[in-house]
Every structure is written in structure tokens, then in C-alpha cells.
Image (cartoon, rainbow, N blue to C red; front, side):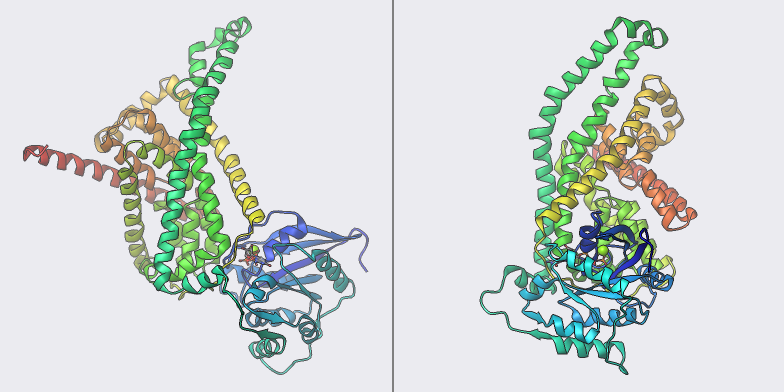
Length: 596
Ligand SMILES: Nc1nc2c(ncn2[C@@H]2O[C@H](COP(=O)(O)OP(=O)(O)OP(=O)(O)O)[C@@H](O)[C@H]2O)c(=O)[nH]1
Ligand SMILES: [Mg+2]
């Protein structure tokens, strides 16, 4: 028997998308990301659980269909089993019992004390599936606890039973032998499960469930949903920005902060100390001037970008939790094949429109290295993150909304053509589509708000500090004339090749810190339409920001990260220059022909 302080090691396992992470979060109180598609958890999360005086370390193992080790997730799951554990909580999706039991039998071979949680009973009910829990428990020779994880009822029972089987070292005692795992799974499912026709009106989700998996009417429905989502982010973002945030910022925040800074700098004691070392006008400019850190450091991330980030994550979370995203994957499979990928890869690409870091981590669910590399290159090169998209909308949308659309079109064109080339030159194979179609679910509102809150919190933490540091840096180089020297050095590139003003050299420096910083400073530069478009093109395809570089180096080799940085930077500068010269040439021809 274990000592009082002993923590049992407990694995939380099961197929992908069965609710493990929801159960994990409820049992441990930690936030594990959950979403309605397979492969949300690609690496494990560890938390602590306790019941009375008993304690355990619970590990949220990535979901797998088998233990065959064809993907990173399966490798992690198998490694955990090989290392051994005191107990397993095995989550079953009651709407997919047979497939779930197939994995269960593979896990049972490890002879570790086990408890089954029969989850998603609400969805099963909606589909007219009824399961005889007692009989299932009897056939499996282990406890089975019915559950609707999102509601979180009965979790105490899960804890109690888990510690009980562990202490009793109760290994599943099932009696069906002599058949292969699939046959056993099929047999048990047939014994415990009854499928009835649902009487009465079919709920809307159930209808949509069927309509969204075939090209007709699936594709138009999806196109409609995506267009409405985009309109909500763009229109809603603009409304929040111009009706609420900017007036607050301009009328209250700026006068308030300027007042404080000026009062502070006018204090005799400050004049005598700091004032005797540096010119206080410079100091004031660094704090509240054109590039003032207390002005731009708040205006850019909060008044300009945050509304778009908030709405984007809200909509992304709804798409994720409803199960619409993987359906989109099935519908666009043919298109994805052309760029060397398969439908399921739409999920990491979609995540990339939020931020490339989770997108690159999300590629772990992909089965081949070729897919992982193609997605990572495409996301880094031509998928703008949400902060950058927000910045584009602010910068270009103020001028003409067509410019925003043109920019989006250009990014798709690059994504598609680069994908086609990468598909040919990157060695390796791509497996046929493997994504399963999850049940369509009504997003749970509490879980949804929590998820958006966490994402916004992360955005604030990850964006604010680097942003302030970068703006401070920009303010200092600007005020001390260093920007001028940098501009001189980069003049051939910035002025002659790209046709931008010399001061635009700062964009290339700031863009390394955060992608939106390669865009936002252009607002203060009084650029022409041509310059705006060229500048935006460079920013769009420019190198990954520091965090993305870090995750690329961690997930692949450092050399690969370096290659992507060099490739994207050269591509951005080359394309920007070509566009600039083409427009020049076009204007020249037009004026020669007397059109303009
Ligand atoms: N309606 C309903 N939805 C549930 C239930 N349990 C989980 N979900 C939802 O199902 C989806 C999948 O849950 P996750 O916890 O991410 O699944 P997972 O098993 O961790 O999946 P992977 O990380 O991909 O292995 C999420 O959208 C959950 O909100 C349930 O009992 N009922
Ligand atoms: Mg998970």
C-alpha cells in the first residue's frame, strides 16, 4: 500500500474528441484546451486530482484511434502505457461505441486498473442511441460511469471509483476471448446498444449534421457561414473600434496621460535630475509623442487590434466547438490535395489565422512529416495572424476596402501556388483524409466564454509586453536619429526597390518582434495607395515573428526555422519590389498612352 503522500499516476485516455480534456479540466481545475475535432490535445497535460485523502497525478493523454504509432499522438500514448501507470480513466464516446471499444481492448492488454467513463450521453440521446450501462460494465469486467462531461455531473463518482480500482488493483476482468479486437468491440456494442428512431421533430443540429457533410448543400452552407463570420469580425471590429474604443481613447485616455506626463516632467525635482542629463522634450516624445510608448503601446494593441482579436476568437471558438471545422475539411479535401495536403489539415491552417504558434503545434496531429512541413511553411508565409489582419483592416480599410480584399486575394494566390510547388519538392507522402466527422454540437456557452477569455488573456500577455518594448525601441531610435542612419543603410532596398519612404526601414525591424508591427507604423507615414499596397505586401509575407520562429525551431530543426525565415523574408521583399515596379511601369505606359 502506498504511503500517505503518494500520488498515483493516472492516465486519461480514449479516442480523439470524446471529451477527455473537458473531463480533465473539470477534475483538475486546470484549463486544458478542448475543441470539437480530433487532435485538439497533441501533447499531454498534467494535473492533480484528489478524493478524500487520496491524491493522483492525472495525465490528459492525446486521443488516438489505435496504438499503432503512425503519428506523434499515438507515440505519446503508447510511451505512457509502456512506462506504466497506477490506473487509467478510459473515456468512451457513447455515439461511437464500437470504434472506441477497439482502442479500449488494445489498452486493456496492458493490465492496468481501469475505469470507463461513458460520455456524450446527451448526444447519444439526441441520436436515439440507448446503452445498457450495467451490461456494458459486466461485459467489460470493469466499472462504467455514465457521463455528460460538459455538464460536469457525477464527476465525484469518477474520482471515487478511480481511486477504488487503483487501491484494489482491479484489472478489467472481461470474459470474451479468442476473437480479434474489432470483433469483440462489435459484439459488445451489439449486446449493449439499442438504436431507436427518434420520434417527433428532428432538431436543427441533427438536420445540419447531415447537410454539412456532402458538397451539396454543404459547400454553400459553409461558404455562407464563413462569409457571415468574416463580416461579423470585420464589421463588428470596426464598430467596436470606432464607436467605443477610439472615442474613449482620444477623448479621455490621451489627454489624461499627456497631462500626467507633462505635470510629472514639469516638477522641479525632475527638471533638476533627469532634465540635467537628457533633453526633457525628447523624454516627453518617447513617452507621449508620435511614437510615444504610452500612446501607441495602448492605442495599437487595445484600441485598434483587440476588437478584431476578440471577435475572431469568439467565432473561431464557435466553429471549433460546434464541429463545423472538420466538416469543412471534408468538403475542401479535393482542393487541399492539390497543395499536397488533405482535408483534415484545414484545422491547423484555420488556427493560423489566429496565431501561427498553435497552428504549428496543431500539425502534430497530422500523420506525415511532409504535411507538417507544408502546413508550417504555408502558415508562416501566407496566413496572416489575427493581430496582423486587424492591422491590415485598420491601415488599408481606412483607405479603401478593396485594398483589403486585394490583399486577401493575393495571400490566397500565394498560399495556393506555393502549396502546389511544396507538394512537388518536399519528399514524403501524404495520407488520404483521415479526419472523422464529429457530431455537430451546440457550443456550451460557459465553456465558450471561458475559452475566449483564455485566448484574449494570452493575447494580452503575449502582445502587450513585446509591443511596448518594440515601440519603446522605435521611439528611442526615432528620437535619437538612429532611424535616419538605418534608413540610409537600407535606402537601396526600401526607397529604390520598394518605393517606400526611408523611415519605412523601421517596419522591417519591428516586424521581427510582432507581425502587426510591420503594418501599424505605416499609418503614421502618410503613404500613397501604391506605397500602402507594397508595404502591406512586404508585411504580409515577411519573416515569422520571434515566437513563431521559436516554435518552428522547437518542432523541427533550427535549420528549418532559419530556412523559413530567410525564404519568407526574401519572398516578401522580392514580391513587394516586383509589385512596385509593375505599378510604376503600368502608370508610365498609361501616361504615355494618354490614359491618365
Ligand atoms: N454535448 C456534449 N459535448 C461534449 C461532452 N463532452 C465533451 N463535449 C464536447 O466535445 C468536444 C471534444 O471534447 P475534448 O475534451 O476536446 O475532447 P478530447 O477527447 O480531449 O479530444 P482530443 O484532444 O482531440 O483527443 C468539445 O467541443 C467538448 O465541448 C458531452 O458530454 N456532451
Ligand atoms: Mg483533448
